[in-house]
Amino acid sequence: MGVEKGSFAFLVFMAVFCLVARAYWGFPLVGILYFIARWLSKRDDQYVAILMRYLNEDHVYDATPRLSDFSNRPKGWGRSLPM
Image (cartoon, rainbow, N blue to C red):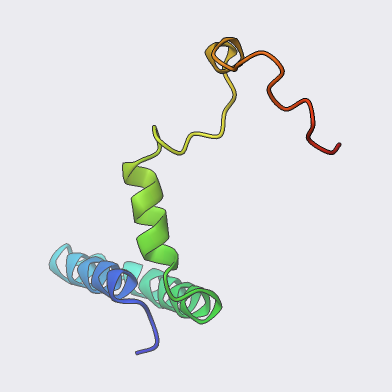
């Protein structure tokens, strides 16, 4: 259907949930999410896999600088980097 398998599984889960919960107002939402997932899949077919890997390993790939990061750097670190 033009979407990545993780996105497709989420869309099917949402559609079945809306059907079982008799929340018929959710079907247009599932349709909108489908078009967003299809657009993302055309832009980057591995978007969902990378997003899930980031969410599971956010403590490893944290980009927020902390004071302990600056104290652990060796003396002269980054001196010859271009500005």
